[in-house]
Image (cartoon, rainbow, N blue to C red; front, side):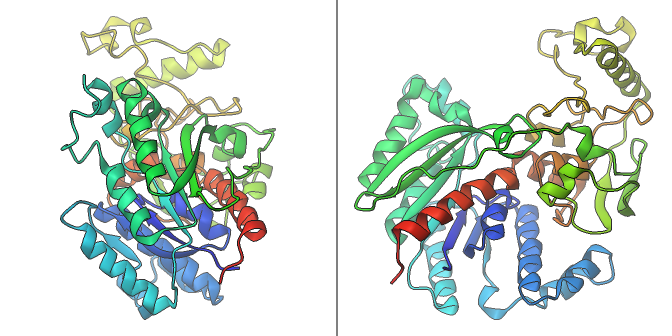
Length: 417
């Protein structure tokens, strides 16, 4: 059974990656950021080449033997517009519809089965500050969900997956979330929203997300069963097979230094015999000294050093309250990392590597692994843009569990005709 989907506000493709792994067929990925869009196109090439047992071409790209243009030359004509690099707005939506309709014709698809995605989450804190939850209706940042609903109304998918931060439920004292659900229900869908923590589904990270799923009112669907995983691993299982690096050091392509941990094997995160994008950011001597103190406190008795605990000569910010938790080590001996967010693109102080010999923040690849991206997932763009893509993503291991539950439900409730 070939279940297709449209991926809105796609980011780097963390949500769609899980659906691809479960055999779903993409009709379009819509994303406004140019670097994330190129990441989506590169990953599209991986899946296309994998289908025809030509993964060696993709590996050639990872190894720097061919250019991105040479890689993309293998893209089938019917997928030439599968990644739509465009902001979703009143001005662009009809053009996006036109491209998707054309994609469907080229792919021989008459209907859309599923729509997935979630608008950028930064907006909901803005809504929460509004005295009137309906007062910012003209602010497109706050009401991108209305564009999402237009896709539901045009394509009438059997089911949709709307993902966002838990804060969306409390924005405007809950009025915003209720208004959004009311609009979705008026479009013909029954809804169920749950807060899901990625740490319960194979991801070595505490990361809560609201997963809102809607299905047509006349169907007998429900919120899918999402497999839970009992964790017996620790965060060091993600880190220990990668070469040690100093701040600012970069290994675009390198060999692993140990055998894969059971976690890396069980999850399929480690995919080959070399790894890409083991890239670190530079740090000044003051920050490295802070990192050393933070790691030593953690190693001694699991203490999280506060900014106010630092010696005066290492403190550069007068507003001590705002910077209280500015520095945080990723506990290698803990079962889960703290939540990874897009701020990792600004500095790495909240994601310090636990090894005192390295005194640095996480590399690009280490951050991607904590988000459960496989090692052959290549992120396009400069380092800052890549960290943003990783920090904003849905962990693929979580999305795969969601996709598996949906696939099982589809197989038992829908016969496509």
